[in-house]
Length: 432
Image (cartoon, rainbow, N blue to C red):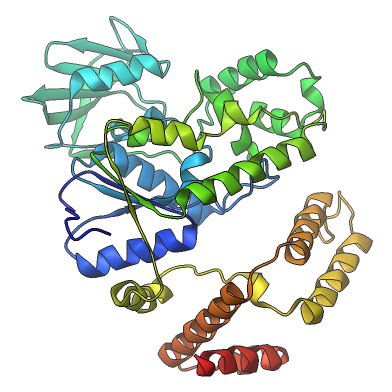
């Protein structure tokens, strides 16, 4: 990026892939160790997927989104695929769910957000979703809290936070902070379920009881893949736009536009592939995803700075290697030789297919079979160019060599059956 990069400003850095986003985020933390940068990770699911994000990714995303709403001078690093994908509603993860005495509190902005997202202004706060304002006092019954809070504001900062009894309106205890960020990117309470049902009926002309996801939401149970229905939990399509609209300086990886086109094509293709399942009706991409042009038009009054992320950059490369073991690093499976490993995929897939029994927890479900079939097909059909495969194998060798050195273990002691592949990666590394 440009030498004039100022980490004390509001900076949005958009990369063409999740891998590049992690590298830049790592580099920034290495170059400016005293600064708090925000990385919004990808959900790690494909458009219209049958599955939800792993719990650790879900937690990281909610924390990152909340930090965006709270920090004043911030630098956000993310991939274009992440910014185009569904995300939580702004208010659902906003700083009103993470309050601390002394924090800035712009009451008019907060009240506007409350009203825009379904909270009801009342004279007296008695139930979840209510709020009221009396002078310097604001009472809010957050959907993420079991008790309402009374916030006293002085000169746009939180002077005190106290819980109160909604029946008597008498404060019960004082607290220094409230940290009640939701566990999911959508509300799992009665209000959320009612909104989901209402919007489902407005969007789909299908028999709702045939849908497993619909039934699970109604029963307040976890529903795999429910994130593709995020707009149904709110009054409007939740989008990254609300989170990034106030960034002053915007930086795009020079390959961002090309990556956005490819991702939009993936969205459209998967919508066409899965749209005819009546038990799992789909929202049109325009109702669920954010288009690239929506993001670029947001910054039409600002100059978007384009930069190149190259593996030859010493700072970037060194930072990636230095902290890579601190992250859950997933290596692309396409660095595996297909002719050798595809038969293993087929063998496992056949075994799962032969042992699918829905009501037997010791066996496999259709969902598990579908999940692995998708992985197998993706491995077979997706093509990487030779240079990308070479880079991936070198990265694989470097990462596990460093891991073995720090943990005093050996990769081949754990995976002796991968000796040929390990030697291939080692030879590729030595050639370069």
